[in-house]
Length: 423
Image (cartoon, rainbow, N blue to C red):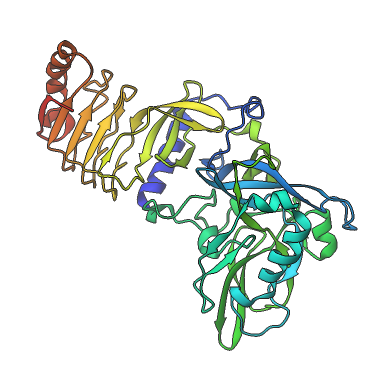
């Protein structure tokens, strides 16, 4: 947690010192790439998120009578190949967790049956049903795991602790703060008519999670409150908002890209007004932070790969824009299994203590852009023993070997290492 908060303090200082242009997404719809959420800090130092979204299925929304069907907009929580994990952008309906205030489990509760029978049948055509990936849903209650087409988030999935991330828990765009706009949602007119109560100036409302507990002879169903808090409610049989989740096969043709949405929309801050300087997003190759919106550059913030040999990608796609990976953040390899790291041609900066807390012993440098200033203290508190230079031809390798021997010194880089030609 210390690293996270120090990171945000750094953001504040950078924003004071550096004026960065806002990012617009006018070209996003023309070249849609469905990707993972982007998290960032707004001018009030609140943590926010941007999600890709898609249209898939249909359900009553603006029609409070529930007659007219409209396309459902979903936020993309995570992409893994052609598997997109989705949550409805708005609260779609109002149902009780269970019909009676009696002990049950997710496997046996009413809302699970309603989602996989009534909602599933009404919201999706046969072709759309075929594009839904049946999911083994992991539950901590006595009912055990279930196989569902449609379900609800658990509390663990809705509350993400960045400091404990080892690559096993995905970032869905939800912030770890107790109060956060990343977990707030508005009900549709239809959901309001069904009984969802909206609060405040912007109409946020409470929505159910699937997490269940039984304590002091009372059943508790967890939910997300209108201000982003999550906690258990003993009034088990009360109707509350429903935000379904499901896994969509992106290789199908039954969905349509719906652009980007931001958690700040609840406060009327639209995507085109978001400044993504120092935003971060988790990708299959790792967690990356945007370091320049105009120059389209990012740095590796955390390596989440389980491989012992790791090479940061030369470029990544974030919010439908291609960014060059040009830097490595402090402690980017802490808690990772990597013992060998290869730095590509685009890398030009290694932060102080870049390899701190890691198992990395060998660093292969293919970049010609490193200087004494941009590698200063990068090996401090690390286990790195060898720097291998492999930038191109034999002549180039010899030239850069001389250069890098002068900058990867104990005095400058923070540790005595062997610098030689190799790959």
